[in-house]
Image 1 (cartoon, rainbow, N blue to C red):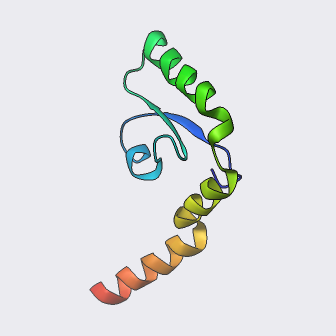
Image 2 (tube, one colour; image 1 turned 135 degrees about the horizontal axis):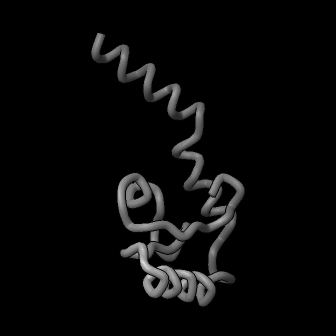
Length: 79
């Protein structure tokens, strides 16, 4: 995503917080060939509608510098 590439991920864990369906990627709901194939099909149908700049911008929320800043702020609040 940091390079503007949309992703396909299972709808679990951290991916649910990071990926915006139809904007930064697509989800699939079960780890089976049929369900994954459907996720890939939806991805291909929308392939040309993804905006690389929006994906890059969204990914910056999870960058190293922001992580460090937020961690320091958390530690300062708690200590």
